[in-house]
Image 1 (cartoon, rainbow, N blue to C red):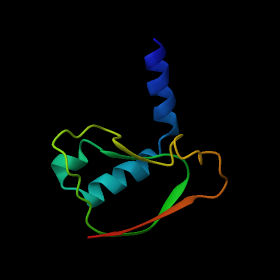
Image 2: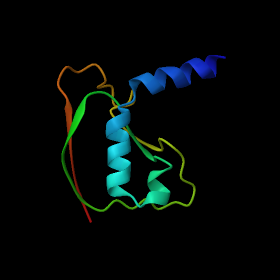
Image 3: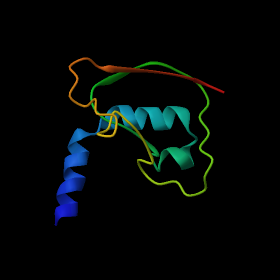
Image 4: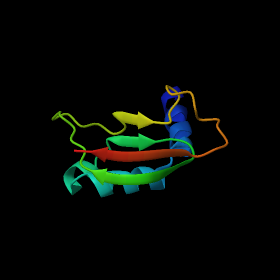
Amino acid sequence: MHRLFLYIKILFQISLVKTLYFNFKVFPLPIAIKTPVHFFGSLKFASLKGKVKIMTSNLIPGMIVFGGMAENIMGTKYPLSYSLQVT
C-alpha cells in the first residue's frame, strides 16, 4: 500500500509532457517507449542538439532523473533550463 502512494506521488510530481517530449525527440522509438529519462519540476529546454546514447541493455523507466529529490531543487520558483549538446 505504501508503494502505491509513492508511485502516485511521483506521478503528480513528474513533468510528464517534458519527459515524453525529451524521450521521443532524442531516442529511437523502441527506447523512447521505455522512458529512461525523467524530468521533475518546472523546466524548459534551451536546446536538444546532439545524440544521447545509453550504454546498457537493461533499460528501466526513470533510470536517469533530472530535477528529482536527489538534486534538491524541486522547490525553486524559477524553471530549470537544460541544454543538451552531446555527440
